[in-house]
Each structure stands twice: as structure tokens, then as C-alpha cells.
Length: 210
Image (cartoon, rainbow, N blue to C red; front, side, top):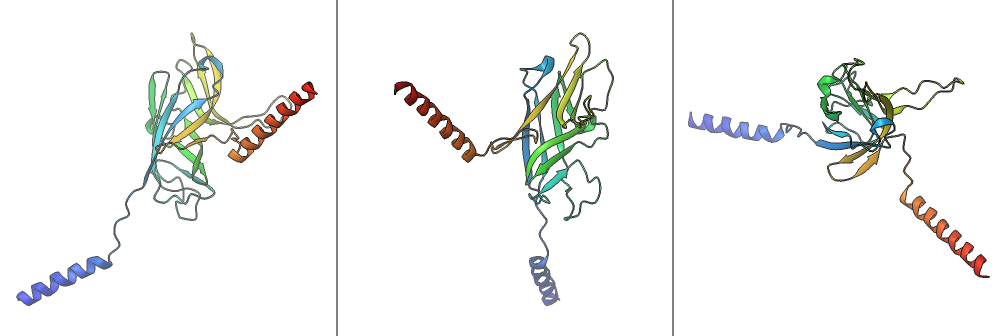
């Protein structure tokens, strides 16, 4: 009997060596801030934060995540199950994923870097401040398609006014990125522009002294 018990215990211990270990969640966290704000909130500091499980994130191409899968969250899909947690402070109120119209804010990525947020505020009353992320641009008077606005807002009376903004994302490791409506030159390009500028100044100075 003792030998049988010893055998079962040994076999059980050996079996655990071959069982797959549970996948540990890999959480990535960001804060974000509205920049280039137009309208009555110009100059204000407005922002929020979000975090998600990046275990199934590929980090290549276009991807998105939300509170839960909107469709097929297979590995070959652009969407991954990140169990997104979202918070945004606007005009004295904190809005989370629960205040989104469908309780499903979305964060979009390109090569593992956030590019924009999708969020529709559930309460659309004209009597309280209204905002939305990823606002369709519509068309101008000539029928030309206007670009997507990363963020837009509307304030009721007496603070009446409207405006829009871009977004700056900062990961918890301090690395910054910007919404896809802002093109940030590569460091080499910036260095080249500075060099050209300095050469221009030197040339202009020499022309005045000669």
C-alpha cells in the first residue's frame, strides 16, 4: 500500500512537469494628454489613462483592443483581447469604460504604439459638456473629405464653445508617442533640418561680411 501511494505521488509530481504553466498577464499602462487644444479649453491640462493585457498583442501592423472582444479575437485578427481599463477626466467628471455609449472604448495601435482612441460619451444631453474621441471629419463646402479629429468637445452655456485636440500618449516607462494626426520627424530628419538651418545662417552671415 505504501509503495502504491509513493508511486501515485511520484507520478503526479512528474505529470506537473509536462502540464503547461498558466500564462501570466502582461499589463501595459499609459497616460494620455490632450494637446493642441482649440476653442475655449485652449491651454487647459486635460487627460486620462488606460491599461490593458498585452499578452496576445503582436506588436506589428494595425491592432486594437477593448474591454472584451468585439469579434474574432484569433491570433490572425487585428483585434486582441486586452481587457481594457479606461479613465478620462473632463470638466470635473471622470469617465470610464462604463460611461462609453456601448461600454466599449477602443484603443488603436500601429506596430505596438497607440495611435488613437475611440470613445462615445453615453449621455449626449446639450445641457452638459459633450465630447468624443475619433470624430469623423465629414466634408467641406466643396465635398472634400475632412480628416478624422482625434478629439472634439462641445460646452453648453455659459461656457458655450467647441474645439478639438490631438493626443500625446506616455507609457509607464516614460516613452512618448502621438496620435496619428501628428507627424513627428525622425531624429535624423530633425538633425538634418538643424544642420541645413545652421549652414543657411552661416552662408547669410558670410554674404554680409564679404
